[in-house]
Length: 271
Image (spheres, rainbow, N blue to C red):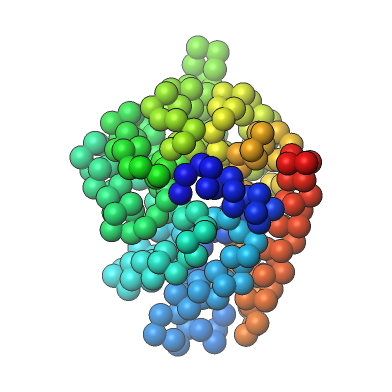
């Protein structure tokens, strides 16, 4: 999916919601657990319920890999089930030497029909560049994350700038706003405002609203650009909004609530 196509979906759906598909077998409703593939069935119902309000879905591969071969089968079925008008992010956080990164890129861009992969930049340019060689595909590089441990390294100051500043400033030269995004946690709004000045034209993937407590309004106010430029992810607050046989209806309500708030902010931008 190109940047223009993604922006079109944002305007069409009046949403920049990304739904994280991070299923934990023990947390999905009990009536699904005896099915042949409970994870896929859970995801399928979540996707059906939330696709009208979401422009992207983000399966976190770890939750599938933990189930072994069966989990990979659930992941592939999930990815292929996501509607074609939605941006598909493989949240895999890959990053290795060049030939290994090339194999990772082929996994998610050729063997699977994903639009983007999250990538760790610690090993430098040759670990990220292979993901940027596929037309219409994206690398989403970890910039400043929302977890507590992010402070161990990402805020360390060198040459009067925090490490995340050096990383983003360097990485942006490896690609373009057409194939490169950055992850910035919703709980880091002060730094998010600064990051937007570093990459004014790039999309930012922003996890951390909902269960993690980030403010959607603050994220939009400091992180949006002329075409929105944001994909804001919500996972647990949508996935586990309900535990009964109508869990997908509760998920739908939660996604709709977020979309309505997003539409309010987008109207300021596009009118």
